[in-house]
Amino acid sequence: MFATTLEHWGYRHIAKPFFFRRDPEAVHDRICGIGKRLGGFTITRAVVRTLFCYQHPMLVQTIRGVRFPNPIGLTAGFDKNAELTQIMPAVGFGFEEIGSVTGESCEGNPKPRLWRLPKSKGLVVYYGLKNDGCEAIARRLRGRRFEIPIGTSVARTNCSETVPIEAGIADYVKAFRAFADIGAYFTVNVSCPNTCGGEPFTTPDRLELLLRALDPIYTYKPVFLKLPADLTHDELDALMDVASRHRVHGLIISNLTKRRDRPTINQTEIQGLDKGGIIGRPVFDPSNDLIAHAYRRINRHLILIGSGGVFSAEDAYEKIRLGAYLVQLATGLIFEGPQLIGEINRGLVRLLKRDGFSSVSEAVGSSVRPC
Ligand SMILES: Cc1cc2nc3c(=O)[nH]c(=O)nc-3n(C[C@H](O)[C@H](O)[C@H](O)COP(=O)(O)O)c2cc1C
Image (tube, rainbow, N blue to C red; front, side):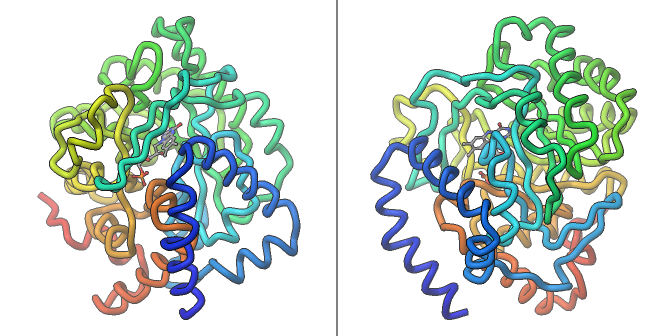
């Protein structure tokens, strides 16, 4: 406990001021490089584990045959090219989602494409699905053993060739096939607005076409669908109706918000930042609203993963009580530091005990009244 407090202080007062004075993408690349090296040796993994990792039996869940040692996962976009899969279990994550991975490799949008919003506790992201492409990334992971479940987020390559619907679907199919036998679960990401052609698969008719093309591809893995934050309840209902007719085992709610008028966004911080979507704190309330709505409608038929604006155990617990079995984060890690994962897991055990639950899954949806 004392060690965690010290790590928290060290990140807040030394590392973060140092990082936050530098270019966000350059810092991110440097951190990934260090993480990759630390993950390469038993001894460095053991040191990181001793410093950060917290496990407890109350946090373990088995979902669709996949064992999650705790409910806190690294969200897609942080480890685009699957270079951190060996170190993230030592940091204390219960699962990790790599990618988004696309059919072809992609440089992403021109720089700059990542901005910090310190007052809003958020980030503006305009990466445009930079990644090495499905073949190279699958080669990197094939034959590896993973300590925690690894999900693969698949999306459409960001280029003009994949804008026609059939070409876009073919691109998803290619990435999906490449990972059919690697890792623990799939995410079909239809919620990246920062690309050529935007988000074509967030309408029911196009989502229907995409899922129909993915259904016949053999995989032992459960499939999740990742949705945007800016849906109305009716739009969410329509997409859930489509998902329920296909091989979709769960939903990730949500990706970023495109709306600049969210009350938690400090308007002076986003002046001149017209491109990209916003993540972090500004997505917390809208994604929670969608999680609760989805849970009310589907109860436990689809597994929900909550994503958006988690900075503490209380935030993660709120998503769980609204219906999420699992919770993902990225911005919280950047703002609070790597000790956050252990802090959240330790805090979750405290909150579960306080409220008389014996496990995470018992708490799922406990603050939502089914309609
Ligand atoms: C640098 C960066 C890149 C991202 N790229 C992707 C991506 O490729 N695919 C995706 O589904 N989400 C992507 N996201 C969004 C996250 O997966 C997540 O949904 C979002 O950040 C909300 O969680 P947070 O508030 O904890 O950051 C990205 C996020 C960040 C910070």
